[in-house]
Image (cartoon, rainbow, N blue to C red; front, side):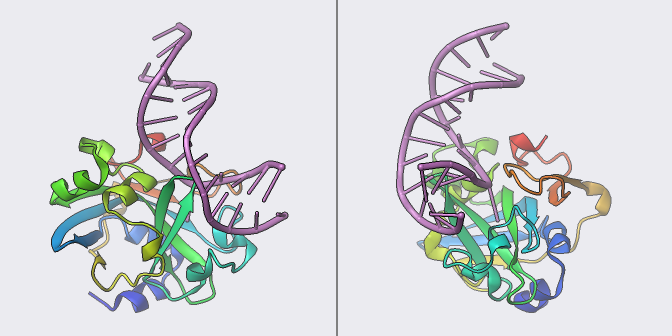
Length: 192
DNA sequence: TGCCTGATGTTCT
DNA sequence: GAACATCAGGCAC
């Protein structure tokens, strides 16, 4: 696999959102490893009124304008974390929100973080952060390294990918920038 | 099954 | 002071 930063830094954020479907995240907690597969994503870009980067760089959005291949973690609704993969060249302010993942290995570790089972474990952006024990301490973390690593996989067949409008936003709602793996049970419910 | 709402605090106006 | 890239639980049907 190519160098993560170069790869993600060189592709358009919408392409990146599509390409990240099927890729795997490897998380290590206290020497225990778990692996999940990305099944739902959304693209965000500075030119996009729904994006945190839309109003320019702020202390919160600083890492969105940094180098690709890092984690952008934000806190929202007073109780939830969500995580993104930064893409594109520096200063572009683009990132891909990870909306849902599918457990591949060591589901027990995910349950430890969340206290739920089955699809409820990881079928939403804040749910998967809780299951993977990701909070703002990991904001800016380089995904080429432990304890959270991103493994790029070969692209899925276009026929297996569905594109729709994004979820839970009030601006720029018409862009078809949400992608998910067709018929995957871990895709978030509101996703249809 | 599906709508409605409370929780809870950071960020930006 | 309002908005917010959400979730879970309650209640009506």
